[in-house]
Image (cartoon, rainbow, N blue to C red; front, side, top):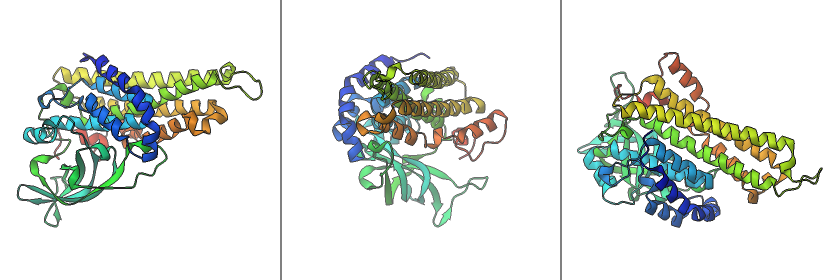
Amino acid sequence: MAASGPSRFLDAVASLASQIEAAADESETARRLSAPLAEAIKQAGLFRLWLPRSLGGEETDAETFVRVVEAVARIDGSAGWCVMIGGCYGLFGGLLPAAAARMIYGVDPLTVAAGAFRPQGQAVVVDGGYRVTGRWPLGSGCHHCTWLVGGCRVFDGERPRLNADGSPVVRLMFFPVSEGEILDTWYTAGLRGTGSHDYAANDVFVPAAHSMWFREQPVESGPLYALPAIALFATAIAAVPLGIARHAIDILTELSGAKLAVRTRQTLNRNAMLQADLGQAEALVRSGRAFLYEALDEAWQVVAAGKTLGLAQRAMLWLASTQAARAAAQAVDLMFTAGGSASVYANSRLERCLRDVRTAGQHICVAPGNYEMVGQAFLGFDTGGTPLALDDRGAGG
């Protein structure tokens, strides 16, 4: 892949590393990303890597941002997740109508969007746009965002608008965070520092141009925006478990050199079972990671050549993302077990890795059910109605 200089963005992560690490406990306790850290990440430009250059963004290649997410998650899973969400949503700057994209992303260089795609809201058609009402879960990063997005079913009066096939018309609506309400719901096992609260809108006016759906053709012409958006997001989501797993390996390696085994009174790194577990974890992370970047590189080569990804190629992105997340979770399990009784203490940090990697793995983009969906695609079966179908820009919507 012809990278656009990932080293300088990874250098930016390195410069923030001590602040990310120092803020991890505060974010965990507050159940939202530390405000000073969120501001530092904004100032470093890490939320703007997939934003079009025409709006002042970096418009990097796909792999550069995924590597940045992985690097942040290696320090703290919640911070990595927040960078992932904010950075992924910068992609909408290339998908929205140009004037709306400039208004949302091009005026304030610190603009960040957050929200959820599930069509759990209702958008009633009115002159010039929609009146939006709804409540959505999992608004990761909502406390440090400036715009919220929410999936909605479109209504003409009280009647739902339908596509030609009888399915409901759905749109993603963008509205200022000041016009929504954040609800304190994020009490969870893991990724506590992401602030993924529910949020709501009550009869908010959204101009027609401030809405979109994934099957529509992108406005920007660069290869980044030719990639299927949901599948692309899946690769960035998978980078979070990969970073967490690498963190767990780092922790276990350090711990094993200091902790004495009860029975042998030797350091744990002398234990053959721990050595085997470490080797297996390393293999899991490296193989999952290699598959993820291989699939991403192959997809990039297709769109960079001006071609469109076929169904099997889109499915490969889902498969690689799911496999990377599954492998990462297995690696963290191994490290947690290898750490023995020390793993269960909060100050070991392994227990947080376990909670965070399991929580990240619950996302639909990396859920085990994707294996079946991908298998169907490889066998040529109809995948309509699955997340994979959302990225089919050849279909109506």
